[in-house]
Image (tube, rainbow, N blue to C red; front, side, top):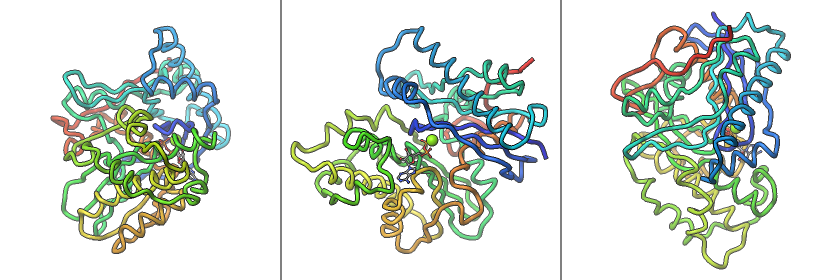
Length: 363
Ligand SMILES: Nc1ncnc2c1ncn2[C@@H]1O[C@H](COP(=O)(O)OP(=O)(O)O)[C@@H](O)[C@H]1O
Ligand SMILES: [Mg+2]
């Protein structure tokens, strides 16, 4: 077994998750996990950039460098905490911070910041990043990339097993017996709820849904949110802050509404958009991973909307819900180092499987 480090920082912009795994490509064992929240100033600048604010080339480059440093610092922290040193690690798979994801149109692209040169130089470990653009160069969405990993660690069961990763965006992976893996984004995850919590509570998220639980679902607003045409598009599809933005929400809010009712409605919207997709398959097991799995209201609403499904977190199937995405990028690094493909064309829509990522050597 070789050891890899995986680093994930998702669209929630909450911070960086890092894991150390041992893998032979088939089995993936979690050895250690750590994390680090974004420093508030960095978070604010990332939010502005991801919201479409204009930045200068200099600001752009500085953010790239600063993120590269932040990824390196988390890596060193992980090595320290787990008692490993750089020479034990074959490579780092670093997702980077998405600042723009545009899978459609004449010039599709997806940009993740976080200088891999710095990550390699500061840690002394091979750093692989920029995992999405090869898939896009081959006509794919560049997303989601985690389904291949989900299949590897949670596939091969005799019933329909759907994974939903509830990060900033929610994406599902459908593992059904004797069928190709399916996976696509289904809508916002925590992103809209986080935005509203920031606006009305001054907090990064609605901790344990306390604010949402004070409100009532506004059916008219819920229906307006659910009428978003993107939700009805067929897969392959992916989305991000570019669509489900503050402007998108503002355009749908009524003039008079209690903030807690908006929070309750956003939670219901998130759960409903997920459940509507899940419900298209014969009932089985729905496993939640990502930060949304810690939101008790989301979990409760998913279970209520899917009465015939067993709804639980991925922990119940033996994979740490908070480590899943970072583990996927550690595994993707393994794939790249072994000249193996990382994407699933049936998921992303790419013309063929491809070796993903840009490799930065430390030497
Ligand atoms: N106790 C909790 N109550 C409600 N929401 C939570 C809780 N813990 C985490 N979250 C949600 O999870 C999000 C982080 O999820 P994460 O999987 O890291 O997303 P991403 O991959 O986009 O970074 C937070 O922004 C928050 O919305
Ligand atoms: Mg996160």
